[in-house]
Amino acid sequence: MVGVFNLEIARIYNYMLQKSDKNYTILHSLDGYDEISLTGKFKKISNTDEIIASPEQIGFPTQNKDTIFGGNTVKEAAVIFTNVLQNKGTQCQQNVVLANAAHAIQCMEPSKILEDCIAIAKESLMSGKALTSLKKVTQ
Image (cartoon, rainbow, N blue to C red; front, side, top):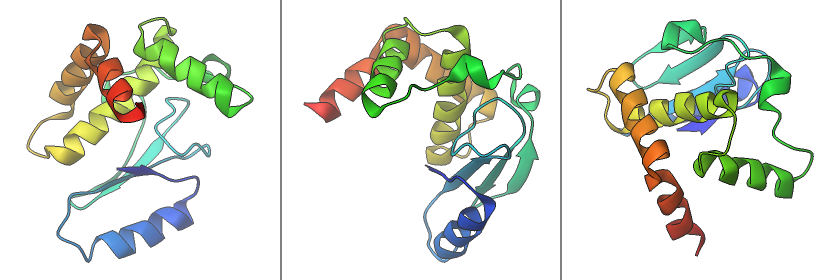
């Protein structure tokens, strides 16, 4: 799974990836984010479909961009992300992480419906498994 900051890049990635036999998902929020930001509609391109969806269509409320601010520096962004993984983030921040993680899970396991992928992502976040995984790859 990859997030891109514009649709032109999304089309390039799709063109390259569709020649492979790999599962892939490309995400772009139509308001410019390189992920599902939940601030508006997003485009999802995968090896199985291409859709434009709203946050509500995937089970989340639309967020104001101020509620998901990711910091002014890489260090600030890392602190915010770590806080979310430690269950210290806001509900809005957690929702963004869950939406993106669920799409990553569905990319890996395309037979699962999105609602099940959201539940898997939520359990991982709430149980601390997501934080444990981050610690493993950053040590």
